[in-house]
Length: 460
Image 1 (spheres, rainbow, N blue to C red):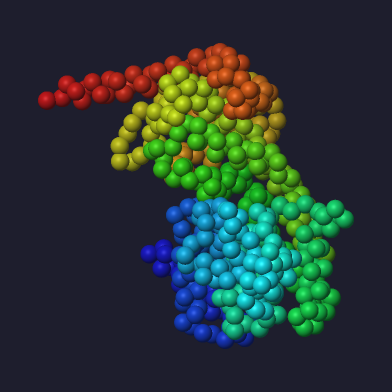
Image 2: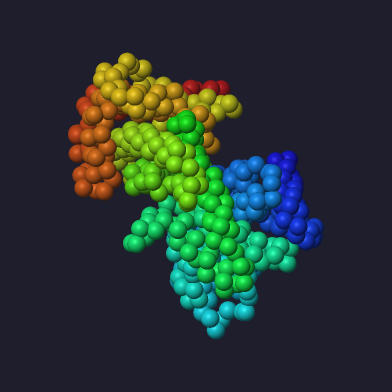
């Protein structure tokens, strides 16, 4: 039912936008395009980059200018090589005339291999790419998505309108720092469009070119708007939806390992620690205005700070579990150490059932710490298919030692993960009461299974 609704919504958006732009409504092609978009966006590894995401990025359906933003949003995440583990058969036919794979790298074909195609030349010009170039990780997915958008809309819309759609897609390449000369990604895009207008005969005025870039900035900022959510819990919900897209082992909640889960959290913590809030949102000549832009940056900074501390607490707690699991083996399912996820179908013992509820021995010292403790104890807004929304073990650790000690434990945990120290050395560096309580909890979990198994054995 949801798939049919998404296809209809996608088709309706395509029809509305092309009508607004006075394009050619070739319904058989639009039906095919809607199917292509929704099939791709509902692939088995899509948890965040889904149909709902592209509808949100498109913004509110309304005036003619917004039609370009709607169309750009529908196509902008069509290719996601890292998530989909490659390029699907359905979309590869659009790409293969222009791009080849060589030892795992995607490369624009050399000039003598390329067919003459003005639309592809336009896509390459918007992105600043050239024949024979290896597609960079930052821009690869957006470029390939733009190729599909251009070919899907060929002969349905004028070339200059397609150029504006491609510009919006290019702007969604995320987290780009300023160039060596101090230009932002939007500044560079603006300069590129000035040349494109002349080379392709669009005759855009400077005012028109600026308005195109501002439009692209709006799309780009909606693409990452979750970073500036006013609720950190909602921000973390989106983070938890991103995790299984590039950590595919998490899709099977019953079989992923302690180490696999830890690695997923560690990668996200590393990304959040590296990301600068000023790189998330774009601004170009007053779009958005200074007050709005600063508010976006400030909320992003706060969410990143929350996420780093929250993920750090998660890393320490799973690090303790992983170190204990090393006493059994090196590839232990997380359900072995912590029990199965809660289910309405049946109840089973979980590690958290054997961890005491305590008051904070060291109360949070800041508003930020208090918020993180609440997120750990009460939980994010939503459960996920592979994890519960609250963090009982991390809550116990934080309440036992406080956040100042937790930060030291994070560094020790990372040393353990790097193999700089052994699992036992890591456990020895942790608060002994914490390690003792978690160890006893695991033993009680094992004992509960032993008792349950014995009862089954004695049954007639």
